[in-house]
Length: 319
Image 1 (cartoon, rainbow, N blue to C red):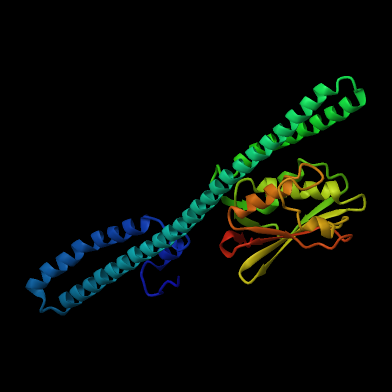
Image 2 (cartoon, rainbow, N blue to C red; image 1 turned 120 degrees about the vertical axis):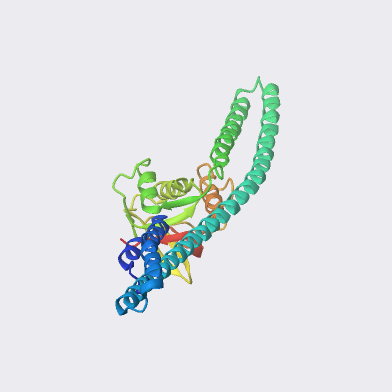
């Protein structure tokens, strides 16, 4: 907002232009109160000696000064109202984004709880079947050992499902917030064995509006690179570029990459060599605030995850 230069309180307005302060109203009112008695005296004197040139000058100058102060006061009040209105609009927009994100998270939680419950029931049914078969194979040690091995795998799968529900139920509990990506990656990388692998992040001042579990997103991506990048991998990188008002965040490494067959089901629940839940959770966390993720790397030349952030969900602060 450009401030006019012909007001007496220009220095005060410059000081307040960066932040709205109730002091503007108080100072304007105080100046008017201070000048009001002088103006009143000028009016009283003019009744008797207005014929005098000096009296006319005093009356004119004092009245002009009072009008100037009143105009100044009106400007400051209006400026304060506009700044407050802008702040309220911004807060209302952020509140709407948070409400929408919480609504989406609640919908996802209800959907996934049903899917997980169905998966666990299927696993328990299979476990009961193998337990019955084990009872019939007590005299056949080799077959019994095979059944016990399958039962342990089912038990491990149920355990992973239960552990996964703990991570998933945390999603959406707290409202989304603005988070510094560089700080989050630094936090996530401290929990993982990087060894000689270096991490490069550009830009360092990128902030995104996402679920508080965003740290889990980058933990999963870094962990995925360390697990499957191979011995030749030396670097993990994160870069960002604006595209048509949105922001494309590129998370990549120089490792083995992801095969064409794995790409199709990479973010599917239960698909993968480890728990099969990490990248699925990654996609779900990001989608709460409308952020999408795809993998577009070339097999043999490293993984490349492209995270598209909507226009109103990122900030790049200039230092």
